[in-house]
Image (cartoon, rainbow, N blue to C red):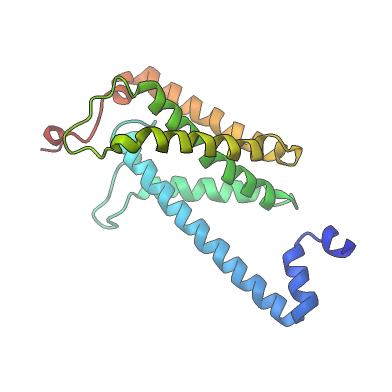
Length: 206
């Protein structure tokens, strides 16, 4: 138990102790491929999000980031930015043995913070929102769904904010939020109307 607790890969150590070194190596290969596949999906999703925001003028250098060359059929510079940021993060933490668990903690905390922000914005603006005829509505279930979302978020955020084990992950998440705030401020100063107007109207697409 002491050796497993001190191991940097306790799950792999348990597999090796029970099933042998060969199975443990095969297990680690599968885990590595799974991490690579998940990272690739996240990178592609990130590039698509960057392209969508740049297309609406909501990022610096929107002209380049939203460009889709006919030869590739994809947002080249948005993909390069997502891949470059991923590579930079890997290189920056390559010498940190605890980087994976810390980044996983930050990667789990960030969606909770973003979801909490979405719910908070909804609660703050729902009285001013004028639904369109084709908008999805919860009807009488809305108060129950919103209450459930708030309760879940309080529990989830408490799990990631109270224990001291997640302090480093919290710093990483805070750094990401600060970086996002800087980008938001730049776009706000250079073109506030891009952030305040609603995009995707039928008339705008014609």
